[in-house]
Amino acid sequence: MNQELLEQVQVASQHQPAWLQQKRQLATLRSTDLPIDHWQEPMVDCWQKRPNLTKTNEQVTTSPAGYVDLPIFIAAEQYPELLQENLMEKAIDWQANQINALHLALLNGGRFIYVPDGAVVKQPIELAYSGTECNYHNLVIVGANAQVTIVEQVHAQNDQPSYVGTELLLGDSAKVDYYQSNTFIADHNWESVRAYQAGDSLLNMYVALFDRHHLVGDFHSNLDGDGSNANFKMVGIATHDQLQEINTRIDNHGLHTDGEILQNGVVKDQAVLNFHAVGKIYQGAHQSASNQESRLLTLTAESHGEADPVLLIEDNDVNAGHAASIGQVNPDQLYYLQSRGLTLMEAEILLTKGFLLPVIEKFPDQHLRERTINELLERLGVQ
Image 1 (tube, rainbow, N blue to C red):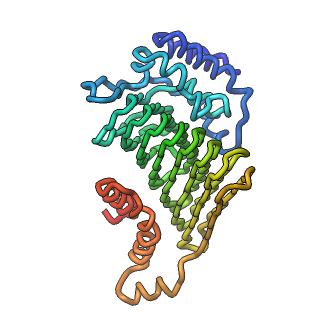
Image 2 (tube, helix red, strand yellow; image 1 turned 60 degrees about the horizontal axis):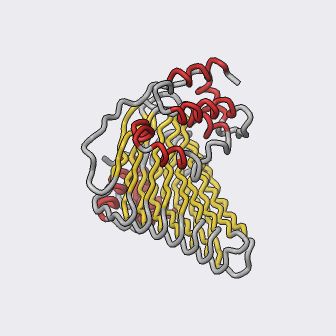
């Protein structure tokens, strides 16, 4: 264990509530005993050598009607019981691996959203932030029968590897529409969105993976309550020498639960884009469903990708299925488009749009659909 790192964490957290100080110090102590994989090693090594503990200076704005929206460190003081019980305990597990433990230990920014039971928030809550914090964390708690739309757009402006973590905790019969499109400056980054769902809750997750740097994405929902439902819809682009490693998983624990994953990606140049999707129906989760569809389009012979669907079924009274495909663009299509006056780049852009738009068009909110399409065009260099 790095004694110098522990001392820096102690100094950085000294004015925070005692429970949070102790939790961050324990995470530092425990981190070296936890598992680590080769994707995490470069980030963990960088954090240990050059930890960034500068706390964000986000200000408290006027309290919105119907819900709580606070910087996470202020929320730790004002809502200690909610944060002590839930921060990296039920969704993103700080004890699962080294990178999660150090993310908590080096935490230097984030937001806390609390939507009380029965509240219906009509305007989307924007988790928009641009700053130099490397370990930014959002904790969103949505009470029973509450409804809300969350739009996350974090711009991590640090050349150190960044970890953006978001936890979504849904109470009974809660409904959450969650949209995300984050961007980074560092070469290697990690983002994790994990949800815990109580009975009859509904989570619709829409993610645009349009960043230009190496990225590991972790998207996971635990359907713990009977009748809970999670739908993931994702689009991604990888270009140049970029690597995107995208892990999606939905675990069906409760009765009559339903998990659906749909993801399309386009990869070109020497880039790699991998979709690893897992649906697991646990024993006793009768009459549950788990379905997934992953599709990749490669635009160049040098680009690569995997669409790796996995179903783990422990009960026989279920509905489960998967589909996966990886295909290179048809040269005849490119030739036809170029014969009509398009350049090769224009033809590739048109094919990329045609491959990703069917998923984007499933985003239910028109404004957010248009916003995602504009981000896609910007990523393709059209705007």
